[in-house]
Image 1: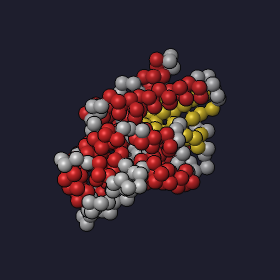
Image 2: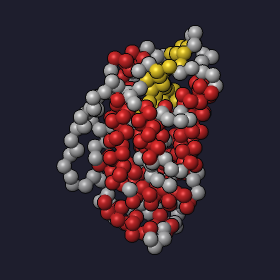
Image 3: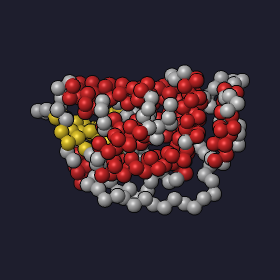
Image 4: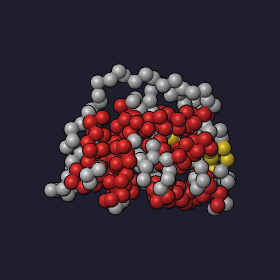
Length: 304
């Protein structure tokens, strides 16, 4: 099972960004601001009937500063919507509750340490990965392997200048602070996807993340470049490079896409305009939300 950097862009539960333990940055030069690639802008779709319009906008949960993506097309759709719907609730109260939820779900039972779950081959690799983060060997001892694995995946990109506060959802919601908000899932459901993995699968996930930290940022850079250009097919191609475990793809992408398509179909019965912002990977490639909607006989048109 790969750590699948594509998950960080588009498919991973958004809850993980708020819940992963903090890792101190090493003493390095500040990351340079990323130059925005020449682009026509991120892709935007819509589903509509006589009295309902639902926009579908793929997001990137973490971005470096300097990426310019918010423009008149997105603004018109966002400002003209009655409600903004994200993957999980993103108000301050919900984010605070999320921290407590991670502390509840992400900790090993008393008397068990993460290092005690590792074999003789895994232990030195794990210790070396922690050293790269500037952390002592015991740093993650209380954590379940899935939470440590998410941290190994996130820490390198955070240290390289990617920031949840620059993420698309944060920016969108800040543009329309008074607009009603909704959510497709709960933080508990999202974290439960990882917490429900068998322990050996969690350890495998963690070790792949630990051993491939250097690959996370380059792949995410490529994905962000395709996202900014609005090239959903190219984005899906990059994602597929890291998606070699069908069970992971099913849990993190396809099952959720099907659930969200059902939500959209039901919401079409209610008049109004909705702006849905979800990880871009859910709107790219085979079995995307658009594919599922098409199977239900619902037309999705590209706005841009």
